[in-house]
Amino acid sequence: MDLLQKWLPLRGDERILDIGSEVDQHSRQVLERFPDRSKITAANIMPAHLQAIAAAYPGVHTVLADARQMPFRDREFDIVYSNAVIEHVGDLKDQRRMADEVRRVGKSWFLTTPNRWYPFEFHVRMPFISWLPPRLMWKAAKLWGYDHIQRRYKSGNNYSDVQLLTAAQLRAMFPDSLILKPRVTFWPETLVIVGPVDEQGRLKPR
Image (cartoon, one colour):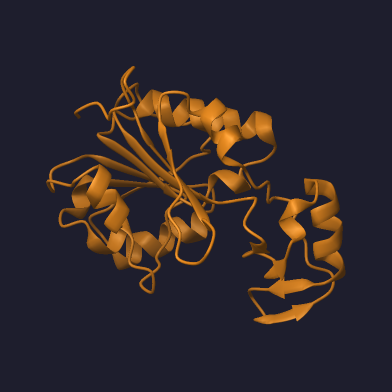
């Protein structure tokens, strides 16, 4: 959220699309921090998440929507926000479809995703596993990895929906965007996509 404010300062009257939105009072993202929730549209493919949002934040608009084919008009939103979703929508073709949709419906956008080259994978909570090709990573994760529901390491986990991305892949998907590499440790853990930018690489005004 600090990076969002730095690169796309919020006035408080923007129309925001939150893709993959869910109630998360621990991390306090857009749903918890934006002053006028009536300006937020929460999109998710899981009805349970939308029901939880509607119960917790009655002013938020909830829409059952697939990020790869969204039911919104071109440039309908001032900001499209998405936190750690694009790695879950499918293969590279599906991720490109999501990228195209984000750039279609948003006047500007701010997305995050784990960095594939960071030497610790946060879904499985294992070192170096993300450096494997996706199918090998899924097989290794099935042998042993972290179960976020049971909150313990075990075998039999299915992480076949995780397709981690590199900065180079994101640049190809979002050619009119900045790819930021913030870090807390010795290496960027997360990649952030902010756009659009002009031919000089400067953010265009909203």
